[in-house]
Amino acid sequence: MVKICERCGTKLGFLDLNPDNSEELFSYKVLCNKCRKEIYEGKERKEKEKKREENEKQLEGLKEILFISSNLLEGDEIERYFDLITSEVVLGAGIFSEFEGAFSDFLGTRGSSFEFKLKEGKNMAVHQLKLKAKELGANTIISGKIDYEIFGQYNMIMLVASGTPVILKKDR
Image (cartoon, rainbow, N blue to C red; front, side, top):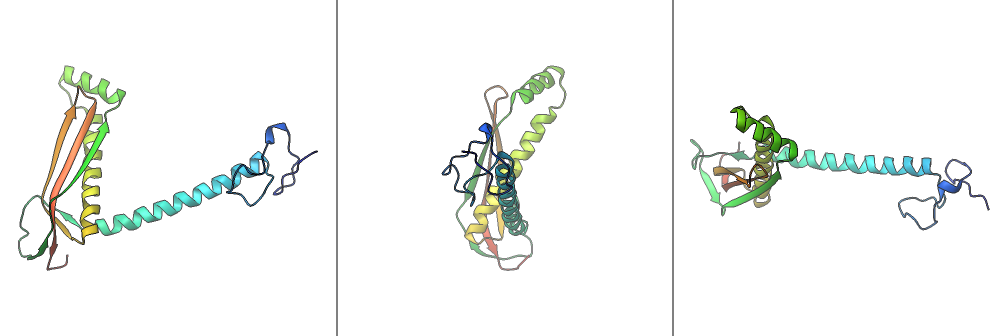
């Protein structure tokens, strides 16, 4: 029996096998590969857009949270202190970073891929710390500190960000 795509009317060939219960994503029971791909990519695109919007919303609130290294902000009064919070990030350097690191070490030059990894890790650690502070209701992180550690010979980079979340009386 010849099957026909319920969406576009194309006759399905041997390569267009589509068991009726294969995917619950689709309201169609019989689809050709082209229609299946179009529907799947459309759904995937919508999911990615939704996730991007959620991330932007989350980032919007984090921009307001200060991360400072001092324990006092001149002119502001602290209303409430929270317990110390930390955030840990471990990144693999990657084979190319390792090669560049060894080469840079030998020549005494800068290792730009390691610098990029450190910057990326720092941003991730501070971002996670700000998320934790936001969950507590804090608007500033004081006594902020970032520690770096490299494990092995150019293999793994660990970053730990820490600080004390507080609520300042004066809104920024």
